[in-house]
Length: 309
Length: 309
Image 1 (cartoon, one colour):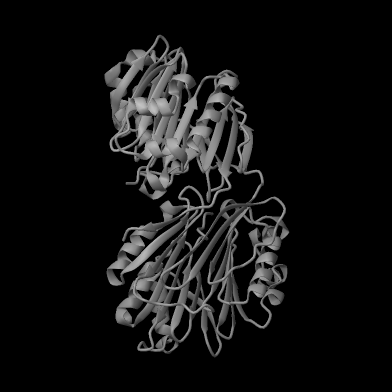
Image 2 (cartoon, rainbow over the protein chains, first blue to last red; image 1 turned 45 degrees about the vertical axis):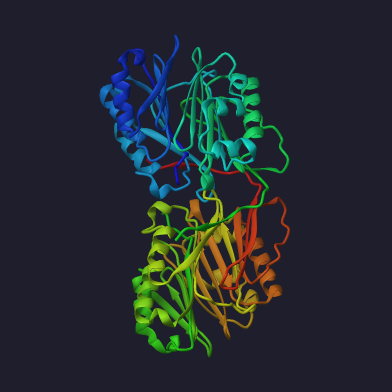
């Protein structure tokens, strides 16, 4: 029952000379998603954004940017390279490609190093890792040509490992419903004013896309017992809203460990009992993003698992 | 310049009906080591034990037991299976096969699950993991048939990640000498009364085997910059001696994180400034070992590495 929740992620921004990305149509994006070995499950739309729930995470498309997040054993880099075939590299303003450490890297079709070697052939770039290889770490590639992100061009991520407590117990159960998840995670309160599109997976698992104007929020739950994982991210630049959401998600999901990543965003971590900060760093990418990385863990006892032989 | 320091390890105990393992001769052990894709570099001997420094870690052979530890991209399980071909499975009292999480599991020729599936076909067993898949963890397999370890049958391990400070700086330099390492690590003091056999690797790296009667101590240094690793272990059952050695090694090598594993052994961790205990567990294996697992980290800032593209 292993499923890799940990995600690969790409954000591609095109220049004003590129076609409007939303006008490329459903078949175009279906093709990109299929090259990543995922499928479109449902979609929602507003004036600024098209949001797709995927069989493995999410895709958001704006006029001049798209964001794709894929978990499991997907090949996101193939989707990106397919996109770059269709949209000339000269129309690309910025590619930011990211991979968090996986629970089981051996099951992945490629490593981050493999992926960026291929991207780098098409679009020269720079790559960084924050954190240690024997623990949590985050890999980031971005294209090398000049780009200056606007200070309001933000992303705030919360990545939670080994969720515990009554909400986690519900999410780990088969037979969960969309309403059951929405109620327990208080999604209507957390994402007030957002249009919600969500999906409950068989036998377990849950994905949410939420859009409000140009802002998205997305939540993915991989509740598998020995390797549960929940990710949240948003481009809403409101520190107050983000601090509230992060705080509530940590209270509800009680992860053993978690990461906070900010791109031009400075979420304040609420103090929790027995919380330890294992890592912290801040640095600036040439493309204009101030990156913040925090890694926390509860000082809990760790588990012993017996293997089936 | 990546080299995987993290080790695979096997301890095989034979019954009184098996041939004396030391009498099997140098060619026999050379063959076992070669099946593990390593080589014998040097050896030392006393009345109880033959000790071999390997191109990747160490081998110790007693009359009724052997211990092999291999790092890098070795295939220790092939060495074990080769041994089991030569020495009938009916002569095996206990096999304990262990793997710590690697820095780069994708570069390994097999996973722990692959290895134990093969061992299990020859010798039914049980397997456990302690710790979390997204951080440090330790895998243990042992054979299932009845065995009762003597309380003095102990192993104490200290596994150190990301060493820092002046001794670490020396170990990371090319041109280090055996005498230079011995002096900086105070090995004559730490292993008083032991016969030492050590090797300095090119361009960096150091291995030490130390034997005193039936007791061994072994130290392996993989100082590569982004993934330094130092392991120490001994079967000396003296808590006082072990506590002293662990305490000195931590002071000298200043690792960012470390694990202590005890098999019928309870080392006391010295309190160090900014030390956090991330995990702790104790449980008993059916074969009679009380296993203790501790995971510690200094509350330091974490690093950002840039990749070469």
